[in-house]
Figure 1 (tube, protein in one colour):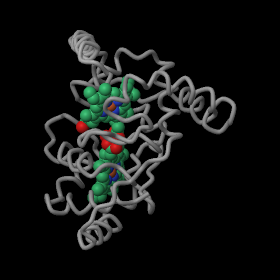
Figure 2 (figure 1 turned 45 degrees about the vertical axis):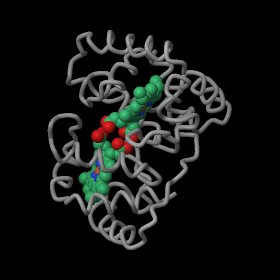
Figure 3 (figure 1 turned 30 degrees about the vertical axis):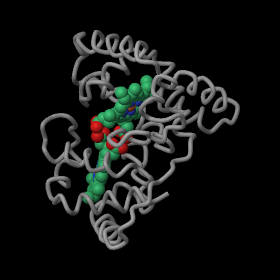
Length: 217
Ligand code: HEC
Ligand code: HEC
């Protein structure tokens, strides 16, 4: 993006971010939308059409999340290969204020529901590119901790499900940030299932978990 486009985008984002948020108690993605997403993911024709439309709409996002949902910035998550229902739920959380990030909250409010839907399918259909850590002892210590404390929800392959994020191949620095946001409990990100567990983690354990998870495909 050239600098003047970037400035325009950021002004638009700020104006939209200043509007009052919808009710904080807004629900997750409806069962109807969830069924429509699953249907589109399972049908090759519908999926291909959504991926095409989603790729177009995602040009707004590529600056930070990369052309194929593999992030090009440290604190920005990979979206490639993420569970589509999890992704759509997070965009709803940014839009209604349950999750806070100044750029994301503004941006998602500009998007039409159909764009959010198609982008989600586009990103879910991309392959994630892991960034393997170098310290094999750190990775092993993260693996052990993951198998003890996280596997019950995130799954043996760390691929998550509709409710629970995929962590395999996610960027290490983003995993560290996310865990600290839950642990600090300042309201940036609140989830009752992550709050308790994140409070048990030391900085060193978070580093090891992130090294293990970012190395996995
Ligand atoms: C200015 C950079 C920037 C742009 C542009 C951007 N994002 Fe983000 N996005 C971020 C950051 C930073 C986070 C992590 C915020 C946090 O730590 O909670 C994020 C998080 C997300 C998440 C949550 C992922 C997860 O694993 O929970 C989704 C979904 C997302 N962005 C979708 C989008 C979409 C769709 C667009 C385009 C409309 C977009 N983003 C544009 C920076 C950006
Ligand atoms: C009781 C179930 C449960 C357990 C146990 C659990 N998680 Fe989670 N985790 C979740 C859910 C649900 C979410 C999505 C929450 C949200 O919407 O913010 C999540 C989200 C995350 C995220 C944010 C991912 C993203 O893309 O933004 C990270 C990082 C994470 N978990 C790491 C861990 C680690 C590491 C452990 C083990 C120490 C763990 N979790 C244990 C349920 C769990």
